Length: 97
Image 1: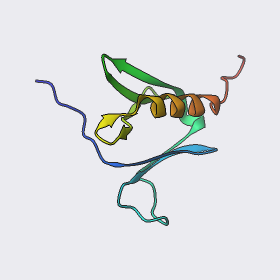
Image 2: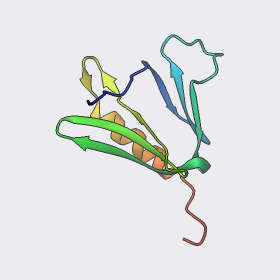
Image 3: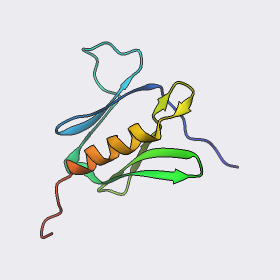
């Protein structure tokens, strides 16, 4: 049996020190549903399978969070690539590298 991942509509913010995810109906003062500091991120990439795309955040502990960015009814591959590159540029190099 294969279960599709649960999707929670919301807003992804690639910030200066962390990546934040807010509920789509959250007001400006709301706490994020998810906050991942860059120090906790090992890698950020876009996973591609055919026409499908997911922005994947791999934690230093081996955990994974993934996001799909939509524009209208379709997947916005361009925005996912841009978000991945911006987040990746903010990762700290591992010690000794």
